[in-house]
Image (cartoon, rainbow, N blue to C red):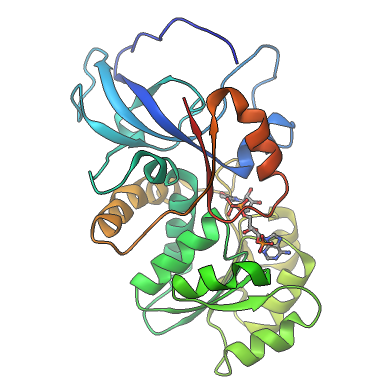
Length: 297
Ligand SMILES: NC(=O)c1ccc[n+]([C@@H]2O[C@H](COP(=O)([O-])OP(=O)(O)OC[C@H]3O[C@@H](n4cnc5c(N)ncnc54)[C@H](OP(=O)(O)O)[C@@H]3O)[C@@H](O)[C@H]2O)c1
């Protein structure tokens, strides 16, 4: 962690005092050099998601006032006490949503919403989510249920009760997965969202859904291209159109309203002080986090 002067908002920028920041797997993938980014020649920020209070406005910045509580998505340096954002990256935070839950919105909510909208999931359909207990999985289950779809989701057994609470039928991943998935939904599946990226997730998806345009992964875009299924990625060039990126921003306000109505919640898996971001990454890198990790400045 480094101490820096509080940044001054430039034209069209707003300064947000961060109350909580969300940790996402992409953060450590960037840190490890697994994503195309600017050369890492100097210390720099990390983190897309946060929640906080607008404390200063740059020239011509519109849409928010000093003192507004906001959800931040699509930032580049949210692991901080203060961040600069543009109005497009901010959404008014309902008072019913606490700081930690609001910081857990950005990437998981934006991704789940955009992918399910792009796959045209509709009421009455059966959705399969591989990786149902993570940040994206839990968001996808709740959105699908809110839209009137049924959901089967995979997780390890200790996380099955959580999937049931969210309205999904839980299934354990691992050997025998195809049989268990068939038993869980005897009438079959319409749509798949893969948030696990394993070979068994790809194989079972192809066995269960004939229409490859309704199977998507958010993990392995290369494998998706080989298999002729769909893939979206916010961090890899060419895997998100401008309209799809706009859906990810739109998601935050839509889902904040659902949360206000008590129809969407964010489970907090762990909290770390900002200067323990490395421990937060170690936990995220285990691949077995249930819910969201947040950093508290
Ligand atoms: N393309 C994009 O734009 C985009 C956006 C967001 C996320 N992602 C990617 O999507 C993945 C999920 O993101 P996330 O934020 O939801 O991660 P996360 O919160 O860290 O998810 C971890 C979850 O994955 C589950 N899991 C682990 N191994 C599994 C397996 N073999 N089969 C099924 N589930 C398994 C774990 O369940 P158990 O503990 O029960 O094992 C855990 O609950 C990450 O790879 C992330 O980088 C991509």
